[in-house]
Image (tube, rainbow over all chains, first blue to last red; front, side, top):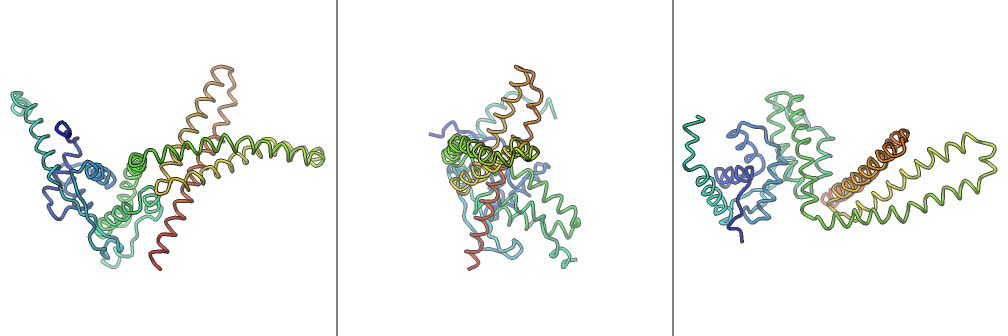
Amino acid sequence: MRDRDYLGEFEHVVILALLRLKDRAYGVTVRQEIELRTDREVSIGAVYATLDRLERKGYVASHRGEPTPERGGRSKRFFRVTADGAEAVSRTHRVLQSMVEGLGFIRSYA
Amino acid sequence: MTWKSHSVRPPRIAVWLISLFAMAEEAESILGDLLEEFSPLASKMGARSAQKWYWRQTIKTVPRLAGFGFRTAPWMTISAVAGGFLLRRLVGPLVGSAAFAALERYQDFFAHHIGAYLFFASTGLDIEHLITFLLIGFVVAFAAREREMAATGVLALIFAAMAVIACVYLVIRFGYIASLWRLTWYFADSLAIVLAGAIVRTHRLTARSRRRAA
């Protein structure tokens, strides 16, 4: 039962990156998307460790692409968000929204 | 410019480190991703900056890969580590007995060569211990397929921690400061275990790439 399984901060960021990238989501694009939008350097190891954890939870699925010369003949591993993953994102957003509601912190701290 | 960027290669040691710690499929994705980003970076910012970036990525990636290797198969890693402990208990006394048997067997020689005797009885024993730990590392790495570095790394850390605790106890309890110097040998023993893991892993990677090429 995963009704109370919320995403961690970086898990959340990674899943949102996958949703933005759609069928172009693999290590390089996910890493660059996160760097671009969060303005912080992210290691490829952190991205894969999180993606593997999400895959074991059933929130993400992956498949291999074709090997390409610019990757030294190595294949890409593409990722997509599963229905369970999309549900986990919604659940996490609901919880965050509910926690933020009434605080008016945007007005106070903006 | 394009030619120059293609001639620049990622740091070989960094590539080797990632191959050591990542599982086969993961290594393929990670090394491919890093190379894909490295080549444009090298042509845009120069080889040095690109190599620095590659090293930064490697240094941040390796600990995560080691942790991931342990978390995905904790029982396999724990069993390999426990096997290493058991082996140490079994083999340790044998090495000690063999060393003292050698001292006895060649006592006539050692009686006339005190320098050789002192070396054998002190540094020689330490070297024998080092070789024992190297062999234990080989066995543990052989048992922990795909997680050679995680298993040998955990075992090495445990032995190193035990050595530190024992030395600190000796210093506090008996004021035996000299025991702190022994730590260098104990750390070398731990390093030997990790070295064995790296050797087994590298050998397996080479064998795999040969099979692929065939």
